[in-house]
Image (cartoon, rainbow, N blue to C red; front, top):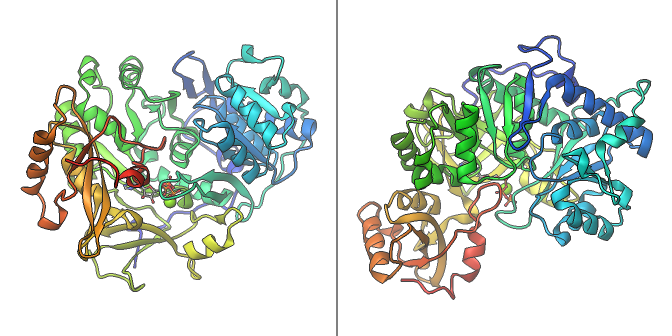
Length: 540
Ligand code: ATP
Ligand code: MG
């Protein structure tokens, strides 16, 4: 068992509002710009966000008799109004439940019903889906509200700013019990099955914010650094690093609604962005996409990647091409999210690692028999600490299966730790390929194959063959533009890999050429989608 190598930090026993907006002192002024919209140039200061949030919270109580524990769903692309809406809801004692903006009507209505949402906040671009889903979930039209440009207010629904007139300075903020009251109901990415409703308390979020700030909060400087916020706000990674961290440390965050390589690069160039949080698919594009050469990205001093495995090879490829270092962070929705964040200087010395455990956490590595592995040996990662979630929504069985009696959350991920406490993620238990009694990690093969000059993108899955071999690794490959996706190229890549890995890890299933690798909005390869069709796909 290992605790954090850093000494534990003091985490105040307060709710999110108190932590962010009733601080004794902070290292920046109230007029510090925190959120800037990359499309309109509109920006919000710390003061503006705090004032708008308290007014919105007050209006929720006055206009809708908002009760403690009521859920507000968010269904919108990244938008600079989201932070104030979020903390406004919590000001009124509410719980915020962000939904994936790519949801269909049926998926959103399921989200609204499952979370028990009392209202939904949306953006003009998604209004029709929001209205239809609200209707399915039994929410009146008056409970659908718009954020974004005020001119978008339609006859159908009001803009949130028109609710603000109901605010009343005599209304008191709802006091929360940070340890037991929920702040967020987030949904996991649905990589291994259906997304799960994850209940996070105020203490969970305050703790993670304080813990993450011990690393990135030390390196990012108010008035000097600028963060490009491209990851989706609705996912816990964006929620923590792009909504909470900037306002806690006083750094400007420039918001993008969705990733697109040219816009991403031109925003870095125009805004002299110094830092960005991404997932591996963006690192892959930075390493391989020819369009990147058209931009000056020299203002970027570091990139953090998280949400899915990233290998040393890709980190090196970006560094060699652009001179930009990439470090990593690791976490889960259930741990609010970050458990490990790499220190800036160790991107090079511990390349490929996700860093050391954050303070106040205890980490164990467990073998299949439920015993701790010896130092340096891989095992399932178990985590204990103040950021471990309260449970899965309406699912006490799944909760008790995930959290042990003595409070360890079993992550389902496998990793090992070097002598300096740097964690290396090997793979997910559910995604390991079982070949003749050996276990093959698809992420490792993907990392190596992604550096092949004819490979644009890659996913590896296990395909069942027979009782002796069990599964063999099969590669789905998107070829680089101009490469002929034929049997000869497939053989060349299979042979190339064979010179780099031991026999059990070779691509015995061959290669299927594909146009695009299915990925979740949070940046994970959806292997289960490929696996479902693997038997019928024609491998070469
Ligand atoms: P679901 O639980 O619904 O199947 P999910 O686990 O992908 O989906 P999230 O909570 O968004 O949902 O993601 C957590 C997972 O992301 C971790 O369990 C881990 O597998 C993966 N992950 C996060 N960061 C990293 C990283 N730096 N390297 C490797 N894997 C990572
Ligand atoms: Mg998960």
